[in-house]
Image 1 (tube, helix red, strand yellow):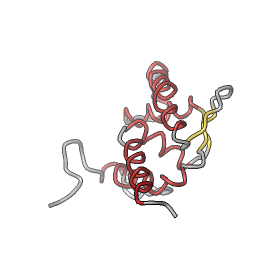
Image 2: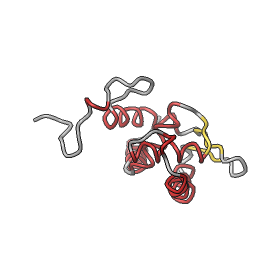
Image 3: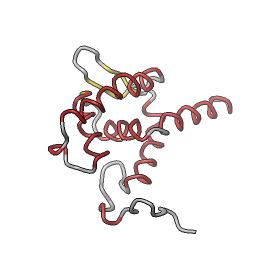
Image 4: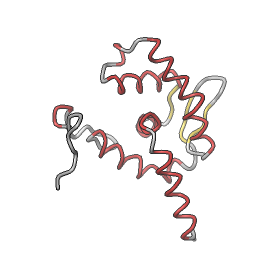
Length: 137
């Protein structure tokens, strides 16, 4: 049985990992596909951040995202056994503890993107615009 302290520690780590937008989107990508390369992940994240198609992402922008993934976000996630990275191939896969945080990742994705883990349930035009509050009083 997991102690109360363990639950608190798990929550602290989970929310810390989800606190960065780029890291969240990395986890959203891997929630759909259990393996991607760092290049593919950086392309998807750059497109999402710029609200453009992956074809419209400039290579310099993709590379900047990839650098932060490789040097900041992936090491943090691998340190917590959420992801594994094959340094030779650049393949990123979910690791053992991803299952523990998956419900939080899926909930964050639903809130942030208006999607559930597998289906887009709300078009971009229905999402709150910048500056709008997503919750009502």
